[in-house]
Image 1: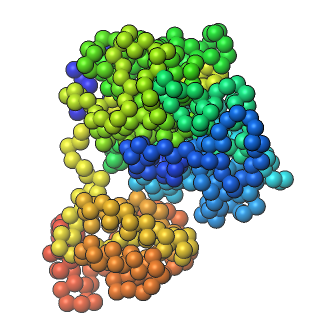
Image 2: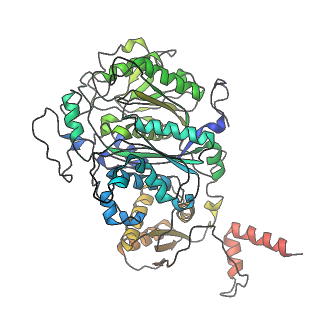
Image 3: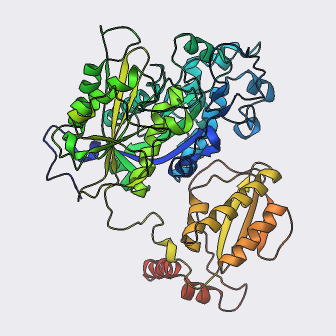
Length: 574
């Protein structure tokens, strides 16, 4: 269904050119991991900014005039090198941005229900925004460990991807520029799936001292986007990746669509008031270009995830550009709603744009616009009366308009490169057939939940995570979960199968695997010489002599098996 057919101008993208977001992964401040983790932070109104990390050997003098606070990742050294087949010495030589990004890319593919090994040899692309972390590396791995090109190239190498691998550095707009480039590559047919986003990890505290000298850091360590009390930004770090396909491909592949990227644009300030000074006219142009690429007018977008750094110079310029674009042609009682995730996690630099993008992907799904924190009052440096834009300081329900929910996401770079992306609610489907009808496979019989890991400890941890996840989501069907575990997770050497007919049986089996204890209904072991990934074939020898009624009982309890059995009978009858 083309739910934009009545309103989209002819210049908009053809529906097949719209990009589907089929998965997302992130690591951000406050322990925010994945879409759900970030949503917990923003929907809960949490400030995830904290003190300087104690595990990086930072020796920062007390003087300097800035708070020792930021949106930091915990345990950036805790990389599971063996999982990716990387030696411990090489892992130490790798920029922590490479390590974090590898893990987040894997998690994003898992979120999409895509087995990473199944992409080996495919034309999948990797588009990553990143700047230098300041990591020194170690002798012998100085080039591959710290080169910017290897940040994206490492992902393609580990996963065996044959599409483009690009690392882009446009400073704080890098990740949204990477998403825009991924979209261009997908539409041109250069790749058929793309991992796109950004990563930022600080190996040294030098950025804090440098920005403090420019007067750009918040003295109290709180980011206050578009607020009267805004006095500077708060640096953060993190990583975020979205998995993109053409919408038509996502539908054909049976992938769940979280949202669509209806349009995007990138431009430059050019010869403006200064190299590092934001230019409102250029921001207006990039917004209008993104709307044109989506075939939308400004009043068809409900929410803006602003760049919103909390600086006295940047925020008023940005707000003015939004008032001149999204704020026009709409009634005062239907303003576009404005916010920024930087109030929660700080300014995640090259990952900032994709953090805002993942926030909006979650928000359009939940139908809630989260609050922007630390706003005493909207900034008096902005002429709020010149258009219909409202800063959201309390969570509000998404406006009901009778059309898909839409949000614009902005990201602006220190050197003048601007990016804007239009996020849209996923179009409705006739039905969710991702399980190919297997959700009702065994209506009254047992199901098997499959869990695996590289080591015994990893297997136990995976079982514990699955148990907690299922407990928090009682709406999940047992057979649908079984199907997802069997088809959308990569199988590793240490394996366990938990068989049960009810949720309590399966939860008890998972608890036993997590504790490393034997249990009825649990089969575990080691897969020796696991073959390369390929098609799975179920072989039925036709004897059925192991116990009485073997084939008859299976046909009676499993409609899919009964259908296939009948088809085989018809084929063999002649």
